[in-house]
Length: 365
Ligand SMILES: O=C(O)C(=O)C[C@]1(C(=O)O)C=C[C@@H](O)C=C1
Image (tube, rainbow, N blue to C red; front, side):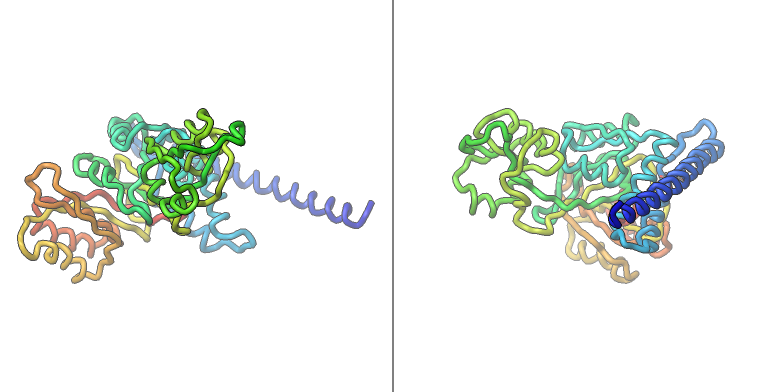
């Protein structure tokens, strides 16, 4: 045997032994999670038991990132533990997660990034259908896009919160890479049409003008639908992401064609219950103020006074006309915090309506 073969043999033996230890530990962890499920059920007999605990998951993932000794990067280590927790939760209760479909969208990628791959992900045809699926109890949670770093807010999602009783239970950010995709079976055909979602066209506008000027751009309901059409129709291409490319067996004619290299979309997790504090949280509210001078100042003043950082403020037209305008506000802190409590009661004194959309852990992954 060569020196290389001997050394490889030794190292592989060590890896086999480590794998066995890791497996035994993961199995012990899974047994603990099963026991957790029994404790939760015993404490709430006959009631809805909330097996998924977003605040606890955020704490676990934060700790893993803080304590990771390397050489694996923190993100990679957290991703592995994300999957272990996902499998443990599935033992407690298989989670049904509704997402803005069809299969292969960035929203599905965001759902799997947030919950791990041991959930059942259920595609919905529209944002309001995701809300309905969770409201009715057919799905445990839902995932919807809320803002893109290039294109701004997804107003349809914001507007849904005006009438929906659902709470925001979490957030997840996804780096969005768009590719120009074609079916390899159609090789040699001139591309005369490009399919994509309107948001993706907007995120790749400069690249398209520079590289595919004059090629017809056809807007469809999702990137995954664009990929499906490009797979079927010769002479066409799609702009979509990796999941859709894989799903429809498409090949990349051009890689990462988004105009901004930091192109990121933020998604919200929506559910039926409130999330306790995790120690590093964010909250969202909708507020309507009377249309009078100084109204915006009056709304923001309590945040300034109590030193609470706003992370976003958006204005939306009132749906009923009785509200002059509606503000969607994200800020740091949890509604259980005394200071946040004080800020909200001060706002409540002046507002026509204040709706608490929820407090949730700041995205860890
Ligand atoms: O700590 C709990 O409540 C658990 O159910 C255990 C566990 C885990 O595997 O760590 C699993 C699911 C929850 O969402 C959070 C954590």
